[in-house]
Amino acid sequence: MKNIHWDRNAINDLIHELRSFLCVGLDTDIEKLPKHLGKTPAAMLEFNRRIVDKTLPFTVAYKINTAFYEPLGPDGWHVIEESIQYIKSLNRFIILDAKRGDIGNTSTMYAKAAFEQLNADAVTVSPYMGSDSVKPFLAQNGKWTIVLALTSNEGAQDFQLKKLESGKFLFEEVLELTKSWGTNDNMMFVTGATKSEYFHTIRSILPHHFLLVPGVGAQGGNLEELLAYGATIEGDLLINASRSIIYASVDQDFDQAASTEAQYLQKIMSKFV
Image: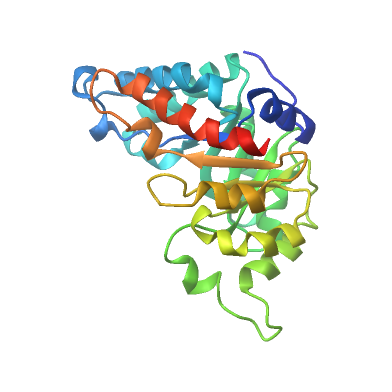
């Protein structure tokens, strides 16, 4: 298994090489697998490998959402491990989308599981329990912590878009505080594509941090708009699409259909690299 040191420069180099910001989300639902593959953990792994093979020329990173694998117990965990090992052999950045966050000693164990056991390059975390819930992830050398800041779901309005007495939104306060816990070489932030009107504000707070942007495709985020506001001269942007790519077809051509959709997105992205 190859282990690239994925610092900010290395990720941006790959962005410029591929002329793409694309991150493909492997939200692999066993119930949605093409019929000819069956509905087994082995079929999930084959599905992931074939999606990766066909989307690789257009893709900088892959994001594995643990929620789709954990219901299968040890078999699901095995699919995560094998998928990560396969992607690593192909020199791509790997995000474990687990949305962890707990008191310090618990977060330390979560970090060990994500980075030492699974060998992911990055993990998503929630900052709402404070610094001691995030810093154990940042303590892992050569790894990235991706902090939830402004998410793409409708419920983001419940807390993240609440105005504080200062006049700022809560998500702005979270960004300004949490960015001091790490550096732009070990911390990214999740900012949803459906909230592109806030990207100018976000970039004013985080001019050189990576943003991981979900919500393109099935959730309806405007790709060109977020590229205009989200990308820096260096790059510093990963745009995630999951369902629109991996379920572009449910027939035997599912992998080729995924490739076509990934290439379509990459073509748009290439104008901004």
